[in-house]
Image (cartoon, rainbow, N blue to C red; front, side, top):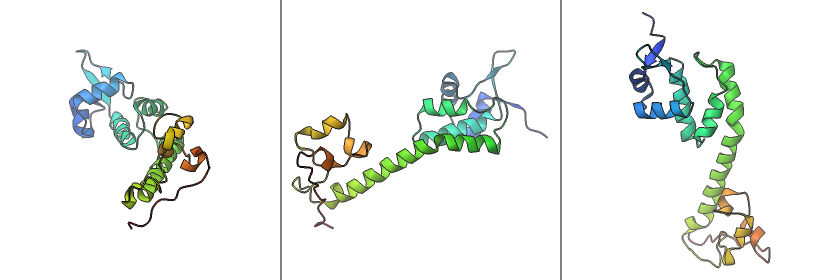
Length: 167
């Protein structure tokens, strides 16, 4: 017996593991598009299982809902995406994922080298920012979010080395 071509919101919820309210939210944001029955009930194409599954994975990878919606807007409505469709999506999000990977690696490396050493010595800390000189580079944790080296904002230009004594 062939599966039904359209799913109720409850069936879609069971298949994706998402709550009904989350599916409604994603529908309101344009990630999926329901077809209304004669009784005004939502019905979703089976392909929306993949669309919502992609959205869940993409969010865990750090993509915003706006980025996810933009990517899903390139997929055809009402049919399952093909291999070529998924390859195109992969190409679109690859650089955003690479930027996130690089930020995570910078964070890991700097935490290992400073906070992770256990000394907490401001005289030797590579991330210490006296006089808030990093503010010139922008808001937020610049040493971790941007690819700026702490030495770039020090007046002497000298680089402080992370303490290695506690290892």
